[in-house]
Image 1 (cartoon, rainbow, N blue to C red):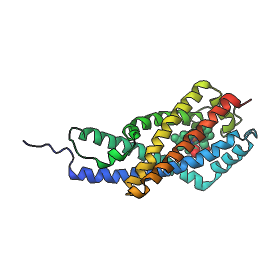
Image 2 (image 1 turned 30 degrees about the horizontal axis):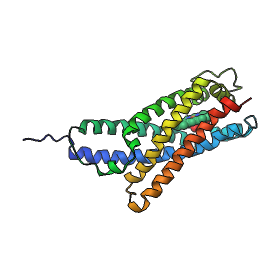
Image 3 (image 1 turned 90 degrees about the horizontal axis):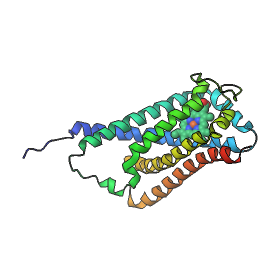
Image 4 (image 1 turned 120 degrees about the vertical axis):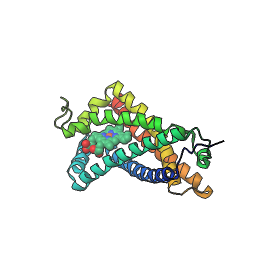
Length: 228
Ligand code: HEM
């Protein structure tokens, strides 16, 4: 019987390259999240936002950070775009039962990367409307804020609203799952998967995902329950 060839060689090669680019963009985004979390935790140090405002002033005036902002958004777009393409390629290749040795080693979260990715994307768009788009002038400055960079007061406005806090908290759960697998997957993509280090990578991935998701979650919880 004639067999259909669903995956021409050219496509396999290019999808591997895409995976490298996606992993590189993902690593960059993971590094950004550490910096973003560190800055945002200044919101809750109890000094009425003074340290946070200073950090915002520095970050929004620094020319290098301004350039990095473009790189960051390019990274986001590349990561999402390739993620969707790879999902479509995988979906279309499903009728053929080919062996995927890395799948069995991967966590169950690996099957749901596109789903958690979509949820994070929806969160991300909502999030930009709360802060970043105000600075850019796309969204009106809320009454509570003194100017377009007064993110401390915007944070109070956002997180004292239970609906928004709930949306943020739910999104951070999915972000945690997404990051846990993403971290391990990036190492696999770059060929750093070996029985010797796999356990270590898994532990570091779990710690990273927990620190980021719990770290971000502390902020809405603080404003919702402990802020006066
Ligand atoms: C409670 C959690 C969070 C708070 C309080 C927060 C706060 C902020 C603030 C104040 C800005 C505006 C910064 C500016 O315009 O200079 C911002 C922008 C941004 N946030 Fe968040 N963020 C949170 C979580 C997240 C998460 C989980 C992600 C990624 C999935 C994220 C990605 C971004 C990006 C890409 C920008 C625009 C780039 C930038 O201005 O630095 N944020 N966020």
